[in-house]
Length: 511
Image 1 (spheres, helix red, strand yellow):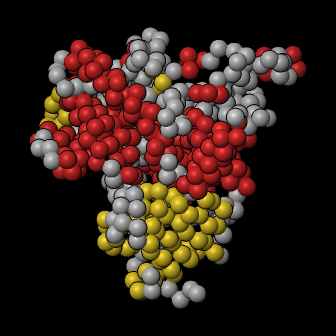
Image 2: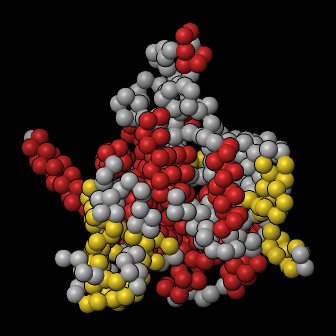
Image 3: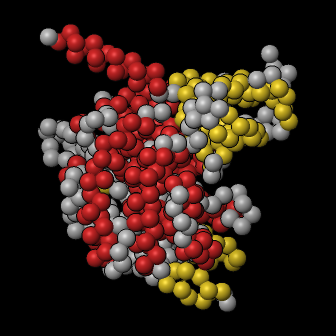
């Protein structure tokens, strides 16, 4: 009786392993965390199963899980589902969308009651499987970026699959609902002689907890979320035949990309230097585990960190963030930090953070922990400092969560391939010690599968399979290349493809 079950299980795992990207990295640690991460992805986000929670099926039987093993929408759930896109397992998002479709009437009721307008959706940051709010953390309950973040994830599902049904049935209602809620909060005010939009009440997740000082005007996290939604909506409308709303363009034009605040170093304001603030008048003043103020860099990717108007602000923001350190970071903070670094071209920093995560936030069974598995590295630790001799005492207070274990998969893949507003960048900045590597099968926006080979610190070949046809916009970095034998000059390629077409892009003169 067990034989059919064994055969079906083996068949499923073989198909799964055939789909996920194959990586051959020169870094044993990153290779390990990638492979173990895609294994856990299969277990946690199985199509036809239950939408993934903080611990999922790995919930321990020895203790009640913290935060009720619920759904957290201000980083944790997004981090769990991010790698489903690039690892070419889009079907793993199906349980999540089925659950959220069932919530839409409740999200609409929340939105209309809170914002006072029809058509707005509001998703609190922590809920159970019936969308009932868990806990009483008011700053999370009013965080409209949670709705926007899920809308963006649904849009990315469309972009990676090019499945219009996904866009029509889940991304579009979330996009419009998130926008309508945000728009209801906006007010116009004059700044430096110009009328701009402003969010008078906004939050940056978890900063100042749930205190009365846990909010302010124009939180950079919320501005980035709204900018991303306003940028997507006209593209989505054109695809499914909806009319363009003039409010979208107005938001793109009149809403600042982030809030600037003076750069303060050692208690002194640095003249003429600015950083990205959490909100108006609030700089990052302490180590903080939620990198929400840097969301314009990742995940919403609404600014180019190297654009002249942003580069100095971004540089000072990263420096300030680094100076304050990781003393209050937790497990899931690290892959997010690594991905921010990768997006800024700081590839070696990204690699270093991933090694740090592996050393500090995994236990002897390779379980991924919320707190450090040792004391002396971070304030969120195993509690051994408070034991005689600073030794662990069994059972020690260990908090297991799945988010970081999948977030590191995304962070590794972001070192190899990045999608930036429809343009695919292959190995945008090679880590300095990675002289040889090979990978295949990383899925991107536009439904392309990407592979590449690096030899002697140079990209020698890029391989592309077009799954849905369309125009390929690719930055490969080679000064001159041959595409299926045809010579092309320049590091960027723009070429029309048909579904199923394969392209081999070789560095010119390389056999």
